[in-house]
Length: 304
Image 1 (cartoon, rainbow, N blue to C red):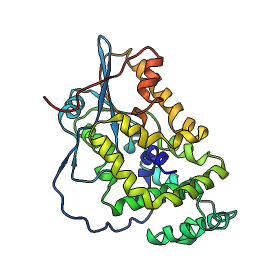
Image 2: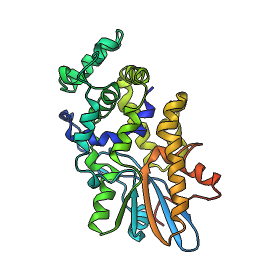
Image 3: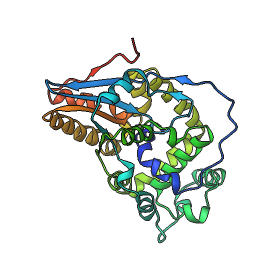
Image 4: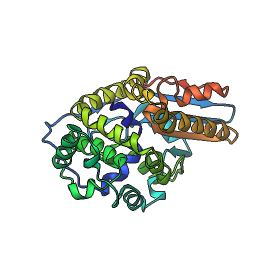
C-alpha cells in the first residue's frame, strides 16, 4: 500500500529542514517539460472560485504555471492553500516535538522480519541515524521514508506547485488563506492508532522499491490533466482503510466544500490550490460540492 501517501505530502514538506536530505542521483540533463494540469471553476453572479490540484514535489524542469492556470491565478485577489507555510515559522520544531517518542519500545523492536531489516536498511540508505529514528513514532518514519527517496530522483519541494503559488501570491500582494494549520495536519497522523501506524510503516517498506514508478505515473496523469487516471493512482489504496480514508480524504474534502459554499456569499475571485488527490475520484471536493447543489466545471487545460 503506497498510494495513500500522495495525500500527505503536503504535511511532509515540513520535513525538509528536520532531516538530512540525501544527495540527488545524477540525472541526465533534460529539457523543460510542459504540463497542462486540470483546472475547475465554481461561480455565481459575483464570485468565481478556481480549483487547482497541486503536486507537492516536482522536478525543476516541469513547466506548469502557464496558460489557463496562470490566467486564473493572476485574475484572483485571494489565494487559498491547504497550509500557508509562512503563518507558522516554527512548524518544523513542532513536528519533531510530536514525532519523537523517547520512552517505550523502539520501532525496530516492534517490526517483524523482514520488515525490521527493511526499516534499518532504509534508514541507512537515506543517511538517517538509527538511534534517533528508531525512537520516533511510526507515522513520522513512514512519511520520512516516503519523501526522502524522492529527492534522489530529482523531486524537490522547492519546485512544488504549492510552494511556487505561495511565493507568487506574496510577491503579487494577494490575500493568502490557509484551510488548515500545520498542527492540524500533523495531528491527522499523530492521532492514528499505534497499531495502524505500524501496519502502514510495514506496508510502506514493502512498497519502497516501487516508489519511483508510482510517482512517475502520478506525475504523468497530473501533467496531462487527466483526473480519472489520477484518481485511480492516488486514492485506490486509501479506500481499503476506512479510517485512513475518512481522516485524510473524506472529512477534509467535505470541510473544504463547506468553505467554498460559504465563500460564494462574498464577492471576488479566488484561486484555491489543494493536493491533486482531493480533486479526483468519487469522494473529491467536486463530488462534495455536488451534494451541496454546486457545480465545479472543468476548464480547458490548454491555452487557445
